[in-house]
Image 1 (tube, rainbow, N blue to C red):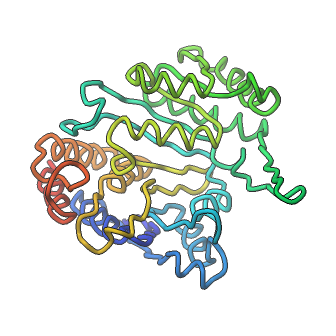
Image 2: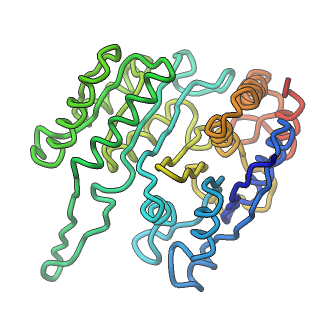
Image 3: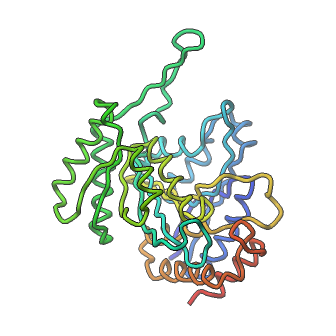
Length: 335
């Protein structure tokens, strides 16, 4: 029986990387009945909402979505689509595996990086509660709750137990924000006592950022509130080649959205040169979520082999091939 999954290609290079990902998923042999939903900056502007009803209804119906990038305006315009989806569907856990790809030239190519970042996805400064107190004075509220902190901490520890991860590092700024970050870190400590087999430590966010650049190979699992998680996960992505090669998953109790975390890159849209690695890697997380572990392993090995060979990489990866050639190589390498 085919899995019913919402497909949101997005805009910019989104439709190109989405088409490439659908092709490789078909090649794995896993039967998927795609429910394609259009979402772009122009659709959002016309509808007057970041999350048009037809998009939300589709994800609520299928329970799972694979999503390409959607353009978000800066310092004005409509609010982030990603934030809207996470809030509406209560996708409380942002999961970002970050690992070294064989053969890919980076500043850290001689270091074996293999970490998973867990970011609380629903509150903190992303609650969007801000207002102008008086002219030219703006106040933004940072919301941290015990409920959300306990939930993301338990999710990270449960994942680590199931997947053989051995150490969790909670990242905070509780030395300054003693109430908000203090609550988050106390919740992490509380949950840590329930998992004695998993080592637990804490780092202040600025120190954690420095340690990630100096010794990225020493990190296993990172556990962070929303804002720090957003920044640190992008920093970590930069260690292994950038946002174009790392997957992303947003997990809730009843729904899951797997997405490429890079931008829509309108400057190269339609030129056939986009790198689909991030969305392909996100689809691997989706396959594991569906219980299709064998297919996920095959696709993971195929991507690794394609990178190791290095002859069919896109321009941003140091190659000269286009999206289709890269995708053909991944399909060819499926064992």
